Image 1 (cartoon, helix red, strand yellow):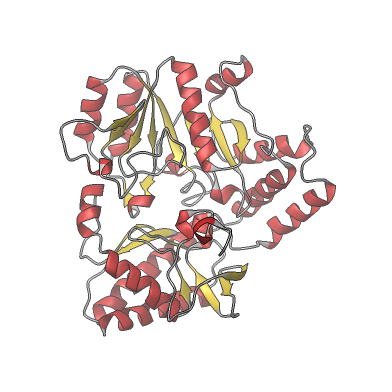
Image 2: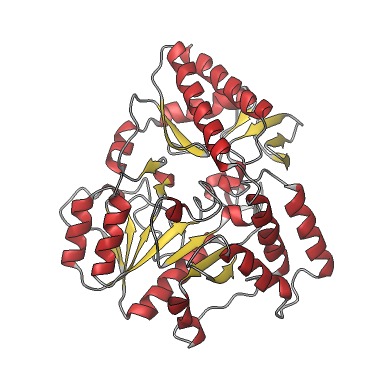
Length: 410
């Protein structure tokens, strides 16, 4: 690669060579990707969760094709924009006002800007080891950083951004007792980038209650988890009612689109010019067509069966390793999970660091590739299940993990 910096445009795409061969995607369709030599892999990365319906879903692809023929960037308002907003809002309950953007990072950035304008406060709180985009205000304390461990009595901060320990009620109470200038707290339904660490029962509800009592807004970052547990926000499925939510990935099934959704009274800050927003490509016809089509397909998904199939695969993986003399466990949900070389899943980031085994994760990725399964590469990597994975695909995944278990036992 002579001109592309580091050979990639996003650091998450790094994967090692296997048996002396690099990996370049030649084609992606349905639950599969093909490399440059034509070998087909069952894909568990699925666009880092973006292609929830599988790669190049036919309904979404056709809607995008029609939109492109009519003009991909007219600059002016177009009917698809309101149509897409309406179709999305039909799935987000009282968060009925929508602004389209191009990435989850932009959506989180705009959510924080909105909270500051509405509350008149400056501080934004995010979860230590959480990932809420790569913009400066929240690109702090991510998994792998020293700050995320929160090892001292001094709360890590970066400008107006403060860190909070996930699943730690006492730390949340301490934070709000110490700081009265919190504009918003950014929560995730699950700490995906720290290895699919699931919230303890009652934790999210307690933090939301604390924030409300202290006059802070609640932003749910659902860029990854939105539409993955049910046809809507994961927070609503879990019994949480945020003030604002950021959504991406699944709503466009692989096309560059994200959204900020919120209560009408909060989103009125855009109408009276308290909040500035812009973006040449925001709400473009291609993105809106993808959203419209994706929402229609989402409404046909049997989520209970999907979760059941994913959970069955997780149990099959555990048994495969047990039969080869190894203890593994998964954390997360049926449609997205992380595999740990441990008898128990971590309950917070501190435990995740203790249980993380970079060598195991790297060897697992390589073993899966040799078995015809492509996966994310990294210590806290995730495995995604497509909403349209058929029984044969799930069987192929089960066999791939069984093969990996045998390889790693050697």
